[in-house]
Length: 248
Image 1 (cartoon, rainbow, N blue to C red):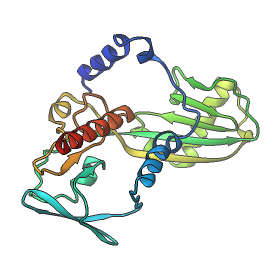
Image 2 (spheres, rainbow, N blue to C red):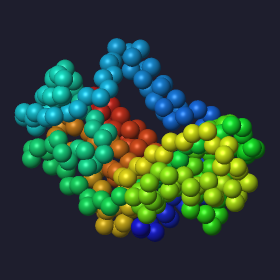
Image 3 (cartoon, one colour):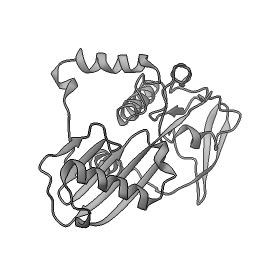
Image 4 (cartoon, rainbow, N blue to C red):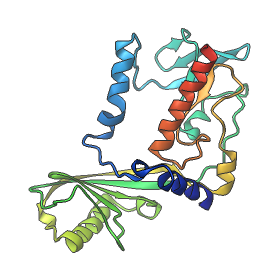
């Protein structure tokens, strides 16, 4: 990974006031924290949200996208298209009229291990573990969320093996009785983040494209941030600004 992007983050944290270095633990889940208000805004302003719609084809005429065909229907009534899907997904549906140079991404896995307990023995909101294969423990009452980054070495392990490993760590750090775990769920995100090598960072595309009404968004575009939620949010703001400026 490039040290340059880490230096940029340190500058933003330590040279932008005390709030820039604040740690915020959301009270609600990611859907409630990030998506619900946006969904409500779209619905209240006459928009429609269609979920699980696979895009099969994009039609282009006069350097504009004029039709998007999905598995169930087609769409032509739009002024702009914002693509917020990952690079590997976008590369499968664009045609040669859309000129996007995709970086040669290498990806890193993240494991989320969810444990439900008979009773909560944890007092803190979250814990960072030192010298442990488990990096973070988030306390949600009788529900624990354990996070392991850079987890490629664990992806091939069975759920039983992973569960055994994390229960050993919880026993060591918190004296948790494994029998208090009532059930569990393990989520393996194999392409959770891209590895920010110097070559990849130099090749990240801008959000404007050669197609007049197509704007890119997502954590992988050139936001000057690593592959994070913050990068995705920043790209959304930039996409909105690009469209607003063209409409003015």
